[in-house]
Image (cartoon, rainbow, N blue to C red):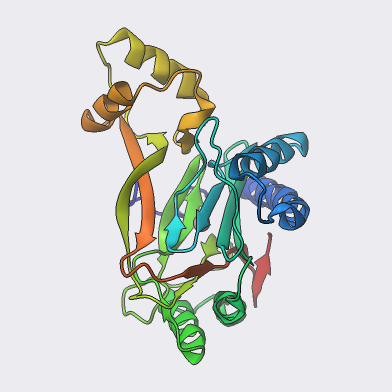
Length: 303
Ligand code: CO
């Protein structure tokens, strides 16, 4: 999934037009959903209720979820989504990251924001400020490393750390994470930004070590290779997720999701799992994210 060039396979002008148009439309859907969901995130409200609200609203507004809504709380940074019949609710003091994606015919927009139910205003501001300053430096001809440097500098001004192993990313049709990789720190690794590129910038700030690792829980999967499999239940499961193509889906979206079948498909290299990522020192994590289109002299925010 990682070594695919972002631009060179989209040469046809009509295809480019379609890509911009549908990404922009997906972005408009996300803007509206984001504003509608913000006031719903309150202590006592169930995570599942918020997840279903977001995913249903994306569909009602004419797009499809590009991945299950990620609702990552406190030290969790990414890839948490509620289970079926999940009873967990937001609590007083929680630092809540909501990461949502929508697509139209595979053209994806992706955005995230942090809601502070406690006393972590500075941490929220650090991620937001980093995102704003990162977007400001984008123009054709710069290296992506300039974006990472802007993010790191902004977060450090707040005396926090960027998370170095979570990145912004490009998109391909039905692929939510494609090149270019947009690092959240200053690094020489990178590519030149070109007009017409579409990518998501997503700084994460933490008062922890600045790194995430997997913890046991897995609620999100995607199909990576359509290999034949012998077990009937596995085939049924793969049939059901065919419609998501290569996009991530939630365990709770499945009618039946036996753990043994899911693990077997992951072991066989047919499914990829997305374990919840948590800050290694249990630091609190904030996040902000927008999808942008690089125009001739600036970045256009589509979310
Ligand atoms: Co993203």
